[in-house]
Every structure is written in C-alpha cells, then in structure tokens.
Length: 110
Image (cartoon, rainbow, N blue to C red; front, top):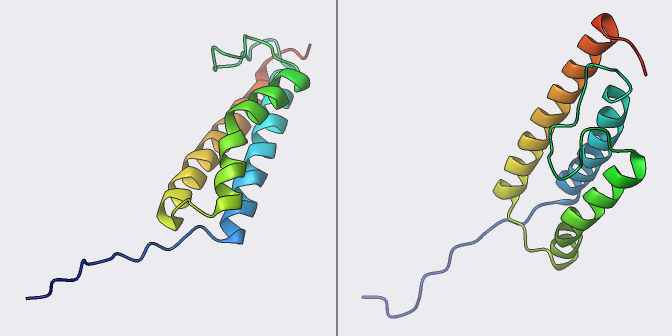
C-alpha cells in the first residue's frame, strides 16, 4: 500500500479566459446602459435600482468583482470554474442584447 497522500492536479484559469471574463464584464455594463435608454426596460438587479447610470454600474462591478482581480493575481481560480463564470456571463450578455434589440423595435427612447 502507498502511504503517501494522493494529490490532484488542478489546472488554473489561463490569460485567455481572464481576457474573456473582463470583456464580458465591460459588455454587461455597455449593454445594460444601452438597454436602459428605452422606456420599457428596467434593470433587473435590485441592488442597482431601476435606472442606474454608468457611474453606478461601474461602481457596482468594481465592488463585486474586486475579489476576482485578487484571485487572478494569485492564480487561484480553476480553469473549469472560470469556464462556468464565462458561460454564465455570456448568457447574461445574450439576454441584455436580446432585451436591447427588442426595445429598439417596440419602445420609445428616453
């Protein structure tokens, strides 16, 4: 029998995944801001209020994503976990653009 402990190798998120992650965050702010320019669109995050402006959106992102910048610097996010974050973020972006495109067709612009 082997008396040595077994170790599992965990691959850490790579630079490309981090680039995608931060790009998704910027696109979330942009698409939210653009969608909120229409009367029929409201922000869904209750922490932001119905019509947050760019400063509030960026402040919110900065506060809630600060741990990710630390984790990126320390290299502690597993690659598989980062994939989940990026898929989730992409889903949010897709929703934002869907709402924005629908609003452009049927709603009045503020």
